[in-house]
Image (cartoon, rainbow, N blue to C red; front, side, top):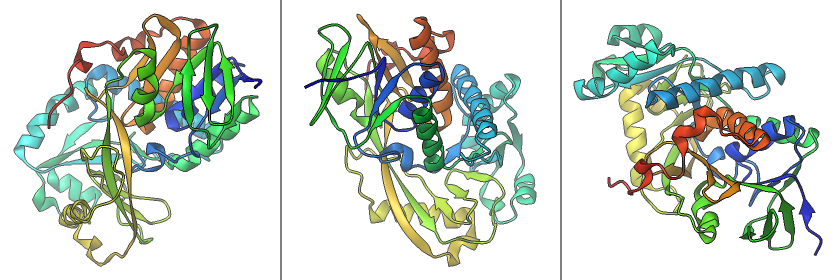
Length: 367
């Protein structure tokens, strides 16, 4: 069997893999993207569509995500806003003094670092968002550069631009085997073989399984999130309301998301959906009369310490791993930085914090 040959193979065509492929192909590098299903078939298509950095921690991660937002704005301008990124701002509601104490240090630190986030009073929340029940909150973090995005539109743009730049996508091609024993790397699917000098594994929750035969444990677990979707409604909310309320441009409202340790079970469950609905109604009673259209769930790849893993395998400098929770927000910075590393054979300084072997990944957290 004659293999499909490329300069770089990217396993995983979600938002992380698609972004890496896009920025590599912009540099004239021939990329083959091997995707087990279709664009948005995994976590990239099962999220609350939020872009946000305001409360991110630690500071290096907040700055990394802020750079990603700048790249989203650039991509939006280049594509005539086809990615549908709306920096409408985000209000992160704080429901008690404990929540306030937990984040006020982040707010101050991120603000000092140039991220435009500030703490506002309940009455200010009521002025900005009249449909939010302010009696339940002690304040909110407001960040005007946060917002929402259409992940499917973004993926369509990234895929089409990557194809136009001379690279190739292979959809519905689950990877069966990765071989790094010879020159370069070989990847086998059920019906084809692919060869390249460099490999990037950006396969979300499948990443640990794919990397394990190469001798390394990737400290990532699946975390289930469930979301409810309402019918299209008149404009009720001007901002993303965090946690749990995002009104899309079409008028539909996304409610959620949950955070559940459910292994690889991506089914929706009535108790979780009821809890999401109850919390949303407490925040915004006006939603009581809204009809629900559908529910969905996704499995988010969660590194044990919550931060991205962006590294080459020790001893295999031509094999890279890229996996992140909150990957939609950070995807453009990941794509740009990983492409720079691969193209120039030099790790960008901003990726040093996200090594595969960092101590904070050594133990699985307990909840």
